[in-house]
Amino acid sequence: MTDQQGKKSSDVHVPDPVAVSKSMADIMERSQRVVGEFLRRQASTPSDPPSPDPLNIGSAFMEMTARLMADPVRLMQAQAELWQDYVRLWQATSLRMMGQPTEPVVEPERGDRRFRDPAWEESHLFDYIKQSYLLSARWLQAQVREVEGLDPQTARKLDFYTRQFTDALSPSNFLMTNPEVLRATLESGGENLIKGLQNLLDDLERGKGQLQISMTDPKAFEVGGNLALTPGKVIYQNDLIQLLQYNPRTEKVYKRPLLIIPPWINKFYILDLREKNSFVKWAADQGHTVFVVSWVNPDEELAQKSFEDYMVEGLFATIDAVEEATGEKELNLIGYCLGGTLLAAALAYLHAKPPKKPGPDPKRIKSATFFTTMTDFEEAGELSVFIDEEQLKALERRMEDKGYLEGAAMATTFNMLRANDLIWSFVVNNYLLGKDPFPFDLLYWNSDSTRMPAAMHSFYLREMYQENLLVQPGGIELLGVPIDLGTIKTPIFMVSAREDHIAPWRSTYALTQQVAGPKRFVLAASGHIAGVINPPEANKYSHWTNEKCPRTPEEWLAGAEEQPGSWWPTWGRWMNSKGGARVPARQPGDGKLQPLEDAPGSYVKVRAID
Image (cartoon, rainbow, N blue to C red; front, side, top):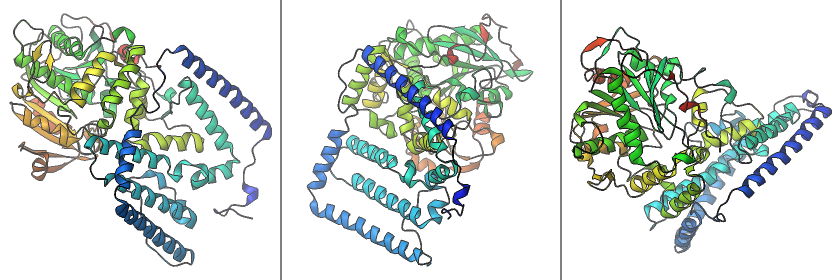
C-alpha cells in the first residue's frame, strides 16, 4: 500500500509513544501556565469594557451589504459569473483527470509563495482546491471593490479587511488542505504537529498570553554582537536620544558632517545590520563623518513627550552636538520615513521662526535627503485604513492606561499590510510544519519593536494622517510658529520605493511640488526597506532617475530613465557635491564631546516587552 507520493506505508515514521506522552504532558502544563498568566494580566489591567468592534469594521460591512442588496440584479449577475467560473473549473478538472491537457482557469499572482509546493499543481485534488479558493477570493474582492456610493475611507477599509479575511481562509493555512503539511504529518507520524504546538506555546509564553509569532530565531542575533557592528561611540544623550559618531574609514573626510535621523517607529540599526548591507559603513567609506540618532524606547515616564519635543530634543539638540563634536556649523541631514517627516516639519519651522525661538539657523543645513518620506497624507496607502475617529479614540484610550502604545500593536499593524508574508507563512512554518523559524537579520529587526509615547503618537496620527495638515500653509504650529513647507529653500534629494506599501511613492513625490528650493527625486525598485537598504555590491534591483521634477509623479516616471543596480552611488555623487572641502579625518572624542559608551549604545538594546 502506498501514499500519493509513492512511499510505502511501512516507511511512515511511527513516533515513540513515551516521547509523545512526555511532550503532551509538557504541553498541558505549559498551556495551563499560559492561560493563568493571561488571566492574571487581564484581571490586573484597569480598563473600560472592550469595544465589540474596536476597528469599526461592522458598520462598514453593514453599509456595503445594504448597497449590494439595493441592486439585486447586479448581485444575481455577479453570482452567475461566479457559478460560470466554477463550471469552467470543474470541466477543466474533469478533462485533466481523464488525461487531457488543460489550462488553469485561474493562477496565483506572481510572487504568491503560498502555493509553491509542487503538489498544488501535480495533484488534481489540490489543484482544484487551490483554483477554487483563488476564484472565490478574486470574486469576493471584486464585489467589494465595485460597490458604488461608498466614501473613500469606507471603501479602503472594506477592501483591506476583505483581503485579510480571504488570506486567512487560504487552504494553505489548514492541515487537511495543505499537501506539504499532510506529507510532513505522514512522514513524521504527527511529530510536526506536536512540535508546532510547542512552538505555539513558546510564542504565547513570550507574549504572556498574547500570540507573538516568531519570525526568526531571536537567539541567533544580538545588537552589538552580530548586528550594528560599525565602530563608533555614543557622544551625547538626553531623555529621547543617544547620538552616535562613527569612526572614520578614510584619511580625509568631507568638511560637512552627515547626520541621519531614522524613524522612532523602528530602531536605527536597519541602517547598520551587517557589514555587507550597512548604509552607515558605506557612507563612511565615501568619506563622510557619519552621525546617527538612536531613539529611546519610551516608557510611561515619557508619555507626554510631544512631536515638538522630538524636534527640539531629537533634532535640534543633535545638530548642536554635531557642531560641538566637529567644530562645524554646517552639515547635511538625512531623514528616513517618520524621521524625514520630522525633518521636513523642522525645516519649515526653522525658515519661519523668529530669532528667539529654539532651533539653529536653517542656512547651517546645506542639504536634506529624504528616504521614503511622506508629507502629504491624502493618499497614505493602506495605513489610512486604521485612521478614523472611532479607531483613533479607541487607540487613545488604550494609550491612556500605560502612557504609550505597545510595540506589539505597532508590529501587528505593519505585519497586516503583508499578511501572507509576515503572518500566515510563519503560522504554516512554525505551527503546522513544526519548523523553527530561519535566522534572518531583517526579520529580527522587524520583530524588535518600539513603543510610541501617547502625546506624540496622537498628534502625528491626527494632525497628519487624519487631517493632513502638514501640507496646508499654517495648518500646523510648532512651538507656536505656523509652518509652511513652501518656505523650505534647502536643497533636497528624495528617495522613494516603487513597491512601498507604507509610504506610497506617488504620495511622497508631493514634497517636490511643495518646497521652494532645488530638488531631485529618485525612485528605487522594491519596497519600504529593501528599496532603501540595497548596497551596490548586491547588484540587485534598479532605480529610476529624472533630473526634472514635473507636476505629477506620472509625468516624472514617463520621463525617467531606469538605471541598473543600487541608487546609493547616485545619491553619493550628489551628496559629495554638498560635502565641502576635504579635511583630516575626525575621531569620536576629538571635539568637545567625550565618548559615553561604544556604539551602538544602550538605548537601542532596550526591547519592548509588553
